Length: 161
Image: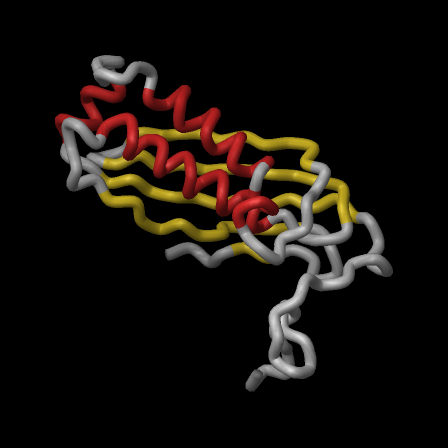
C-alpha cells in the first residue's frame, strides 16, 4: 500500500488468513461505534411513545446489539473470538432518526472494533425489523467506528464531521 502498511488478513501470496496473535501482549482494548437509523417522524414518535406493534423497540434493539457483539467471530470469518468484558448499546432519538452507539471492551491480544461495529449495525437491523410494518423506508446509515484504544496502534478517534 502507498503508506507502507499492508493488509494483515492477506499472506505474502495474497490469500486470506487469520492473523497470528500468539506473540502479542494482552492489553485493555475499547471501541466505540455508531449506526444511525433514519425514519419518518411518525415512526419515531411511535417508538418513543411505546406504541410499536411488536413491543419495546429500544429494548429489543439493545439486546440484539449485545448478542451480536458476543457472536462477531461467528459472523465475520477472520475475527478472533474475544473475551468481552463489557458491551453497552445506547439508542438516542433525534430528529426523525435514532442514533445507536455501542461500546465494547476486552482484555485481549487483538482489537475489539469489529464487535462494536457489529453491535451497532445489528441493533439498527433489529430496530428496522421491529418497525418495518409501519415504515419500510427506514434507512440504516453511518455504521462507523468513532474511536478505539489499546494495542500497538494506540488510540484513534474520528475527527468531527
